[in-house]
Image 1 (tube, one colour):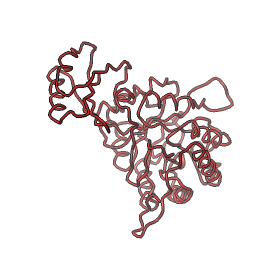
Image 2 (spheres, helix red, strand yellow):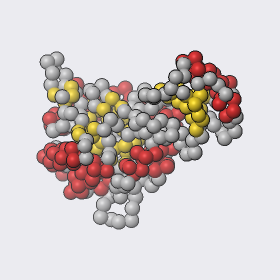
Image 3 (cartoon, helix red, strand yellow):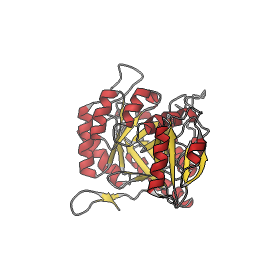
Image 4 (cartoon, helix red, strand yellow):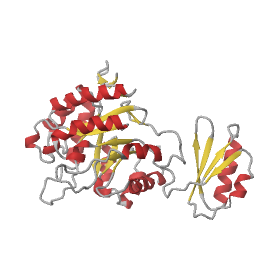
Amino acid sequence: MLVVMRHDATARDIDAVVDTIREMGYDARPIPGKQRTAIGLIGNDGKVNADRIEALNGVLEIIHVSQPYKQVSREWKEEATVITLDNGTRIGAGEVAVMAGPCSVEGEAQIIGIAHRLRDQGATILRGGAYKPRTSPYSFQGMGVDGLKLLARAREETGMAIVTEAIDADSLDRVAEYADIVQIGARNMQNFSLLRRAGRAGKPVLLKRGMAATIKDLLLSAEYLLAEGNGNVILCERGVRGFDTHTRNLLDLTAIPVVKSLSHLPIIADPSHGTGIRSKVIPMARAAVAAGADGLMIEVHPDPERAMSDGAQSLYPDQFAEMMEQISVIAHAIGRSLVPPLVPVEEGVPQLA
């Protein structure tokens, strides 16, 4: 339930509503807006006596939220959530943010070298797995903390923000220590204990859609993060299981406008996992931008044939540069732009142009 305050409601009016809701046994969360403040009632079991709240000074109206997810919905917060990273990258503000890098951190030369190339080509966020949940227990599982340290060094040298995946509670604590964005992968989308912990980690969270998850499932998983007080959540469409064998997954681009109509959270697309085939990545990246995605997550490797994971879907650096040129044209055609590239400053720390 949402309590919408009048535009001239005072701070004392808002505090009175919050106190009343808490006296009724629920939690209250004020949501300041440009014109007025709304107050979200959390823990609603459907038996709330709205009459007591409606009679309070400054209350304009009460809106009953019909969806099972509350805080992620447009009814709860109409304005789009914008997440700003330390290097100036904004996600959800209308610009297209690009996250790029190898599937796995494989060594110092690999990750540092590709970070510099990607930064020069316009990416502002570096992706790379230090912990890798693999289908086979015999596949490369990642470098762990050593990989996180290499990512941190790449950030120091290039100014790029870091996004990397946490696969359990222990790795989440380590990832939160090193990364700018904590990624929760498709396999863990409904690992609710991990989601709660990520919601308390104090870092933005990138939540990937599960391989057989509906959009409602994705939004309910995001609700776990917001319920723990973390409003900096980025959703990611990365493809769902289909019956056709020509691609690894079915990249559901309709999820982008659907999510934007239902939720205030930003949503990006991952055409690398969404297709699993290098030649399909650029066309689907173009389509995702045209569909309104707030960003892209692209796998790029300096030598895909020798990649320790997901080489078949990783772009060569030259292909990534080509993709950046093409999506820039598409973005401008629909009145958008890419996040400005990072450029060196006098102190040696790159920042947005």
